[in-house]
Length: 300
Image (cartoon, one colour):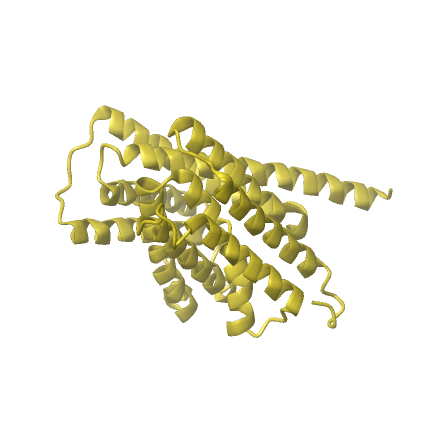
């Protein structure tokens, strides 16, 4: 094995570890948000979390000599991104707070499937019949989890799907976002979008802001710190090693999210959840693998 190959293998390993750490932290973040929403309204939790994260990213931008506002922030792709970011964060946080954490986490894993399908329809990217079949199988997994014709189906189950669609739209818009915007800038406006979503939900609820207890403030502070470290770990992972080698480890979030849901919140994980999770993960991994095999334009 050459020195270059050894370095790449080591970089892929380090990138994978960063990705797993990011997924652990995101799962913990979801659990803490759910816990905080037990005593503070969901809208206020989102508002506090969003503003706290935005302040941290703003301070980082200022400390590194970057501007808080760049003209490209007002570009059409960024405006579209903000809309989808608000919708994604609003509905996903609602799903985490009001629905089982395990099911919300699993459904979120279908985001790459929707992104690939939409990229083919909107951006004209080449997606062959094999990957289309994988997308359909993965979305079937979502339906298995939701069980729309079963007695266990409630409108709360749809919240995670709406959140997942919002995040898919955000990711698609991010592809067209100007390259002049740094990840810290995107992080700043991402957290501002979360604060906006929280404010809108507070207005819709019509509930006044309450003074959090010291315990609530401590919990919110921990959520903000975990969220910042999760986002930073994710960015570190995507910049270390090959994307195709690191990205599959995103699915480790499913294990952590389901595990926390079962152990911490005493949620059930039945055969429908297991089958649906398997279909989503296997479909996503297949799509990633086929994407890596695409140098030959006739392959799909």
